[in-house]
Amino acid sequence: MTVRVVLPAHLRTLAHVSGEAKVDVPGPVTQRAVLDALEATYPVLRGTIRDQITHQRRAFLRLFACEQDLSHDPPDTLLPEPVAAGAEPLLIVGAMAGG
Amino acid sequence: MSRVRLLVGTRKGAFVLTSDGTRKNWDVSGPHFGGWEIYHLKGSPADPNRLYASQSSSWFGQVIQRSNDGGKTWEAVGNKFTYDGPTGTHQWYDGTPHPWEFARVWHLEPSLNDPDTVYAGVEDAALFQTKDGGQAWHELPGLRTHESGHLWQPGAGGMCLHTILLDPGTPGRMFIAISAAGTFRSDDAGKTWRPMNRGLRSEQIPNPTAEVGHCVHRITMHRTRPNVLFMQKHWDVMRSDDAGESWREVSGNLPTDFGFPIDVHAHEPDTIYVVPIKSDSEHYPPDGKLRVYRSRSGGNEWEALTRGLPQSHCYVNVLRDSMSVDALDPCGIYFGTTGGQVYGSADAGDSWQPIVRDLPSVVSVEAQTLP
Image (cartoon, rainbow over all chains, first blue to last red; front, side, top):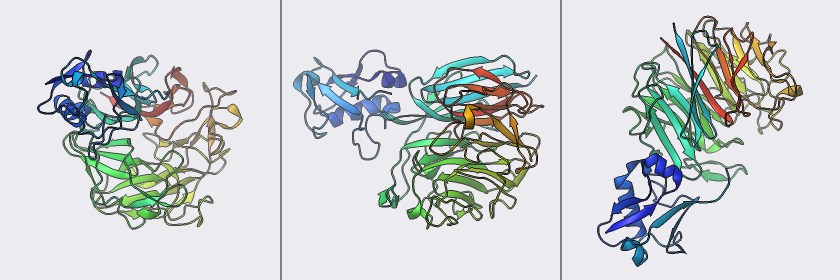
């Protein structure tokens, strides 16, 4: 499956991505599988979205799709079907926290 | 004619300032990594065009950048900083045990002779090393696991390892400083460490002369005389003549002995510079006057350097890594402020001019002297 991912602006710059990132996800399309594929495609993103050891999501980042907040879903939960089908992107969003 | 390159880290990006040997006109490049905190950039003494930068963000964590062309282009390298073995605990602000947690890289110190070898001082305090140009980082765990580690406590800015000095005269000897643990020395390339805080006195800790627990803000040395160290402590300016084994106060006639940076003239090992700050709760210069103080006698007797610096209504701070000297003659000295100014002096501090006035808050300044 080819999954569309929208990155925060700073991570698009870091990964030299313009527009959406597209990653191939073998098997079930879960949060973990998409982030694994994203980090495999763009190694520079390792550690910027989730901890490199624990794989815990970084505190100031959220995961949205299809108008749902998926941030607290277990990482092996299937993402919504439109995301898996490439119809909707997975949004990785930086918290609005000033600065 | 020689040139000077200043590597400036700020709260919102990095800037590279370059000038010829006259140091009158400066080219400003940046922001690089706009929007990210750049705690420190430093070039390799063995290859001045090899630069390393610590890029971090509360949102996105730690990134390390490397340049092979003096800062024109950059590539992200390894950013995996994993403590070696059980992390143990240090003291939290309230005195309770708190597990070591990596937050960011405060300081990068390239090896004196190998551009691919770099030391990184991190928060929570530990020392890491890369030998492959930043791709892989490995902790030198002997420091963090020192028997006093469980007593270390963060300063207001976090429990950071902020200073790394490599001794050019004694292979394997290095000094580091941690807020708020103190100074440590290794004589075996970082395998084992000893606290080097005898003579320090800090009224803010239960035992003012304890072996560890001192909030050392910065230490420095002259490369030709590495047994003589100078220190700006939370309060007090200190000097050691025996490679850190003992310290004595040399604050002398300073208007206040609180401050952050301290640096040594490139050609005069007894000429040192500090920027007195009013107090630890008022992080600005006394009387609203930004003054660098210079001692030509290795401490105790200090003169105010004011020409070209604001002498009214100035309430900026100068952080610990924000002062640096070049190796030209006369020696150039530079510092950055939390107000976004970078000041430079091409005459060893006698007179100053702002090189830039309106950068983001400056965290670090490193001067490179180029052929």
